[in-house]
Length: 471
Image 1 (cartoon, rainbow, N blue to C red):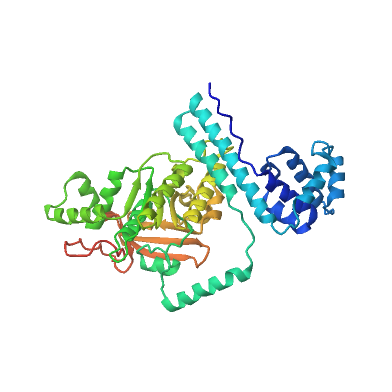
Image 2 (spheres, rainbow, N blue to C red):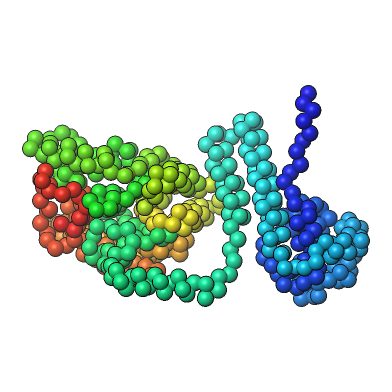
């Protein structure tokens, strides 16, 4: 039997007393403490009761001092449990000034977070020992619980305008000097980048369409442009829940080499194109592309994998530039039950937006549209924001929503529509909306600018790699 005593949970009793004492002697200290702390953040039960009484007084607009605190505790029948008037008097004598209440409150909060983390870890350990659930379910619940603890650590305060003004004017001056049409991650589609200025950091971008319209093709085109940029290739993390990693690489290679994808799949491509295929394979094998091809990923797993990769890249002096998810409706929410699928999609949407802000990079999520565009009331099948499937939260959380529309899909017998497509920007939080004509060559699964209806030429070995999707 071990003689080691059980360690006490992390606590800061002196800081707890200093916070309560500060609240009793100055009104501003009450506001600051309530902004940072909750009743459960206090370790000692008597301190929790006193904090509750002081909060009740403040919320009613009453004075907060030694006398009113004693009366409030009597009213709540908690005075004896709080230690009586002697305990309140001792709190006032604990601090000479309330000037350092922020520091004391931060100490109390930190110890509270550590206790909650210990409690969470204990629950996870118990779940592992009992084996009452599947390991994947235990892992998802553990990630969700730890993330909730982590979110408590961030204190969202109010920022004064003067603290932001200087930083913003410097950004404006830098933009004026550079005069760059694209300030974010470029898609490679000239007109699209001109309208959006590229994919911006912290933004959640939805690319939505009905099936077989080219969502995955456009996403892979964008990824190719970013990772194969000859001047500044950037790391991209691609989550695929529908296609295998091998299938994705096959499409990337065929598109880059300008070889018919179907011929690549069945092996009937011309022998003369073999060199182009091997050259494209070599380029892509050196590119900073990272793939996760697992079905049914949860939003928590996506966030975990993305953070791990970003941390690993930063240790090597780089950073993740873009995350692409194919596609949103295949993501699972947490393992906790939801009343309906709309609530689950709302949770997923918020989780992806949180990921974009947390890692400070753009997150592109592909999304299915409902069948509404194909209903009889619409002759051309053009999509609208209301067609976003399963949740209005998608429209609310997204910073940019782009639809892919190919009229030839609905009018297959019209030869004038071949290779024509549109990217419709239906929502852009920081810019204009509008429709951009593009070309789409199905054989190569390649989007480009609509400068020509002809298919792009086959890539010769001497041509540059695919970093300009507009040709």
